[in-house]
Length: 166
Ligand code: CUA
Image (cartoon, rainbow, N blue to C red; front, side, top):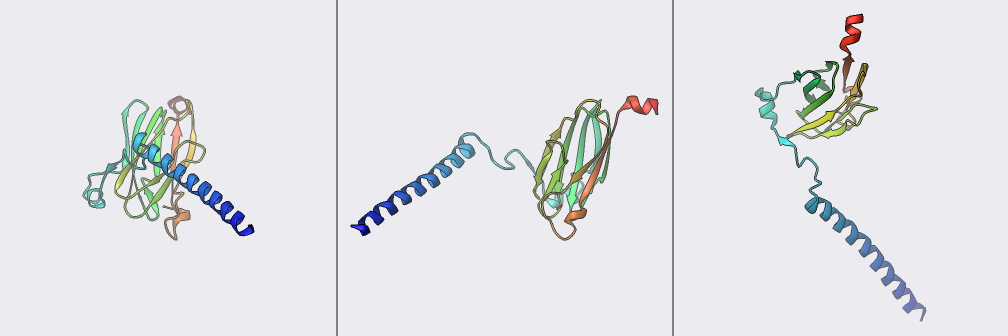
């Protein structure tokens, strides 16, 4: 009798665990296939050879007043450029590539926080609050090797009005 009760309970728990696993798998399948939530699915592929051949130039470009495009090359253990100067930015599109391993790209205190995968151009858009000024750190937040702690860059933001005053 005791033995039979034990088997029944075991069967109940196996059913519950199987249902939880099936539910998780179904939810992943739903978001992956039906909703299209996939990592790097919108990223443009780029090879390290392409970057080395100059098909991705690091640097800052103001494509319209206040609209910036910033190309960044991440590698062990630096970001290039390491200093990004912006005046009155309204919208900043960071395009980040990695020359080696997975790096992170985070501006603490903002919504910019993502992985940088080798083989893809990661695009991260930041719309800074109006009138923002100061220095903002860019950090690598994926452990990428012994120099990981030193991998950083800085965004220096000024407003044109304060430049005139100063
Ligand atoms: Cu790059 Cu940590």
